[in-house]
Image (tube, rainbow, N blue to C red; front, side, top):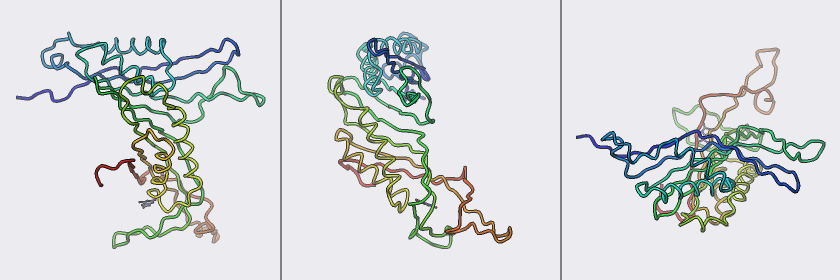
Length: 299
Ligand SMILES: O=c1[nH]c(=O)c2[nH]c(=O)[nH]c2[nH]1
């Protein structure tokens, strides 16, 4: 006899914009997010018995997002995610867990004639800030913050040599290569028992630190490999943000191939003479790691 072994449901891609208008200065601050809420609980009969009684409609979830966004700050997004999750598990006794994902899009203030403009913004790249939270009834909230789609490149300061060689190996060693990746970096917070516990947490400061550490380490590290550089980033974020328990990275290695142009009048374009390269869209390396403050299990 088949059985429903797991279920959750909710509204995805709820687009949300909120403006804060400072009456005194006339300066506006805007936030744009895409929100997903998914609920878990005693909802089995809605699947197995066509009983809609326990269903908090996905439309209700969407309306709740709008109302709570009006009643609360939506910045920092970590706190707004926790507020939404807390609402769902407290409001509905049969809902025992709420998953909230918030994607925060970039609206960067314009500088016009050297001055920050009070109400005009631009999208400076596809980078997004992502929050994934799970609030469980009487068990607090687990939050993971992320940077995604931050595209970076360095034109030197990266090597890759000394790797394992056997009869399948073709890659030459290199002491100077281009390094480019699209950063996906995550940091998992300690579990917060309630909303009061996270009220004073500087989530935006941690985000700025994680982003700055990622960029500074990428730029300044004399990189032996993607693996070695990403591990340094994890260590630095753990040291900079004491409430973070675990840091993880997923980094594609976006290859740039040398092109031998010697067939054309002996043009020199390899090794130290290489200036024209062929960026590769695929395949790419893909390197993951998670570094924990208090390691439980070995790899
Ligand atoms: O930094 C790197 N790590 C690897 O594991 C790897 N493998 C590869 O072919 N190139 C690279 N570069």
